[in-house]
Length: 109
Image (cartoon, rainbow, N blue to C red):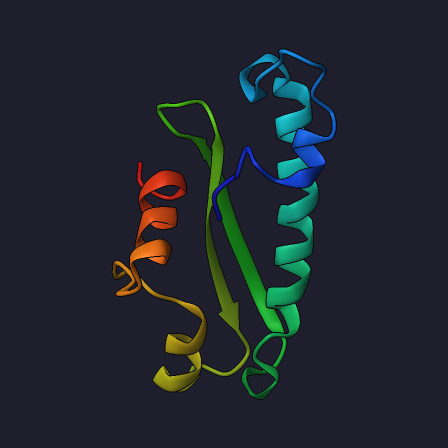
């Protein structure tokens, strides 16, 4: 997960003339809220995999100062189909040019 400085929750807190770099506390708070929602979603995203045994995550900061998170989850059942995983995880550049631009702008570090 990568923080997007254009999230409405961030933009709405900026005063005239401010940029996201001026409000690091807002950046971190919004990122933390969205990360909590993602982690909760991942808990039940694969119902056939059983309960979550453990989850590990590490938050890092990109060169431009935005946080991003690497997440590892171990489910009760070892086998989740590759089709299920491929539906939500990708390590490839999207074929759609506008999607590829978003990845380059917000997810490359």
